Figure 1: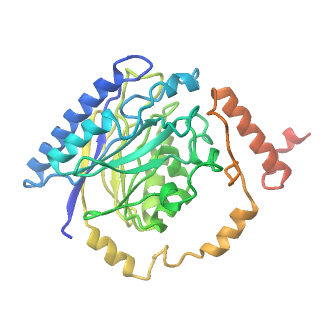
Figure 2 (figure 1 turned 180 degrees about the horizontal axis):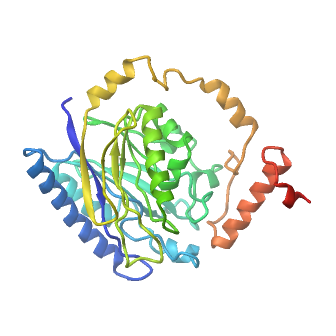
Length: 354
């Protein structure tokens, strides 16, 4: 397989709670950006066009209000996948012969009272070829979408559903989303399922600071290095027409040695492009040095995870509905923390313990 180019898109986003036509506007703008990315890549790369284009988290509708986020404010922005929006993106995928990835809120008739944060990949034929329901969402501090871990009693236990990988002529592709990237287990599971290219759509942050950029950069490099994978990290551009959230930008593409191949210089709207060489990655994995998957002792680690469950996500877990608001979420997090203290996993600070 010859090397080819991939794009990490960095678009401005209009918030769905600020503009009732946000989805249509964001969708039209995203299609324009796809055309620009294809033309720009062809111009600078001697006629070659990108084979993969990644968009950030919730790029079609925003992320809902900051402090006053509720199930109602966010679930009303959710769409079906496949649906009208993925069909329009699919037209662009067919037109340009590329894979298009991103994430959006999703509703599904099988799960009333819930909505998911769903990653997707559209193939060059225009079809939704992969769907991944974000696992680390209801356990974050800011998100209200339902995780498969919240409804495991009725969600598929199939590993290919929980950790899907799309095997394609350009490599084995997978998606994990934003907060997922702070858990090394998530991309590791995808790598163990065969992923060679990870696409991590990133969303806006509650506050700004260089520490967010540093964490984003460090986590992406480590996830790529420890799993011997390429990582495509699309992020938001600065988006003043959204709901009081900050976008740091710095979209990037990282190689399987953890080296940044390209990175946006800030939060302005544009895209970054870098080469993907799958054959070089596969040769790298044949080398025993720092070949972490081949050297992984999964059975030993699995015993600790089985004996020390943390956030509820066992096979009998079944929330009847999604979280109502952030206050309910934060109360749940407090319960989990206290359980970890009681079981001796965490130790409380002395001042709090008195």
